[in-house]
Every structure is written in structure tokens, then in C-alpha cells.
Image (cartoon, rainbow, N blue to C red; front, top):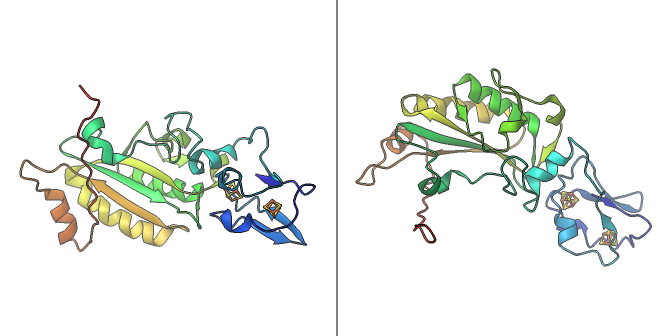
Length: 236
Ligand code: SF4
Ligand code: SF4
């Protein structure tokens, strides 16, 4: 995204619209900070500029286009066809059956509006998860960015790309999962430049109890339960 200086009247109306604070006033001109901008498209879609001075190039070049793919909800990821963070997400498990009994599903989300995250942080996450034996979801948009499956290294050219947020999803066998929770919690606190959150998904038994959730609480974590029930409308 950029601002056409021939059209811009320096009214400053667009500055508060950017969720990344990337629209700045410098040397009496309004600019988009190329490094801070995650190409989310909000400034243009909001329609704030009466002069139509907020412009987008015809085609965002690679690897910068990765920013838009992770940050603009109207931009579908090439491998998933899903916009935004590009994944159906684990809470739809009652439809997708991604997580079977004996497996714990994990997701690590990095970044948030206002802060964002560099994919170098995701590189650290994927390497760490790989070393812990995690099996990544192939239909997650982080997966095609992995260039070396044995180490978990991401493609070097995307590491300096900044996104609003990104999610890695993976499976861990239940018997190893509590150890992985502890390792990842310590790692995320110590090693990342951005913020991160960890989610786990486990199946409840027929009484609604979840053994793994009890283990998580006993280990001193305070999980925030997030349940969702799809009632099957439009399914046969
Ligand atoms: S809203 Fe448009 S005219 Fe006003 S400062 Fe932003 S780009 Fe310039
Ligand atoms: S595309 Fe998004 S991040 Fe970039 S200037 Fe516009 S609102 Fe800000």
C-alpha cells in the first residue's frame, strides 16, 4: 500500500484507521511505513480517503505478498482457499475430525493487531515444534512455508515479512502432550519477539470429562475453555 502524494491533501483522517500504526506524518507528508505495513487492506477498504490517495500496486511482489495472505481476510491463501489466517481452525473438529482420540491438537498463534509478528518468530516456533515431534497440519498456510521438513526451517526469503498474525497447527500423541505444553510455554515466553498464545484441543469422554484438561490444570496452567458445538445444519 502507498499514498499518492499528488492526491493526498494531508487531512490525516486515515492515520487512526490503520491497525498497525503504519500511516505516518513525516516531513509534512503522509506516508505508509513500508516496514510496518502488513498489507491488510483496511485503510483502502474503510473508504476513509475522499481523495482516493491510498493506493495499491497492481501486484504485490513475492515475498511481500505473504503479508497480505496472512493479514487481509479477503485474500485467500493459495493452498487452503481460506482467507485471513487461512485455516478452518481446530474448534471445527466436530465437522472436520482432524483430531482423533489419543491425539492432542495444538495451535500456536503469533502476533495481534497493533503489534504483528515477523515470520522469523514463526520460524522459531516451527523449528521448536519439529524438534518436539509435532506433526503439522498440511492444510494450514504455514505448512507450505516450511522449506526443510527435518529441521522445520521456513523459506529464508519470508523471514523478514511481517504479518498481523499467523497460526501453526500440529498434532502430538496424548502421552507426550503435557511435556510439550510445558516446553512450549517456557519457549514462547523466552524466545519470541512478538506475543503468542497456545491452544490445545482434546476430546471429552462420554461424560464430558477430559483427562488432558485436568493434567493441564494440575500442572498450574489456567486454561480458558473455548467450546463450540456445530449442530449439523445443512449436513445429511
Ligand atoms: S485520508 Fe487521504 S487525503 Fe487524508 S491524509 Fe490520508 S491519504 Fe491523505
Ligand atoms: S494496508 Fe493495513 S497495515 Fe498497511 S497501511 Fe493500510 S491499514 Fe495499515
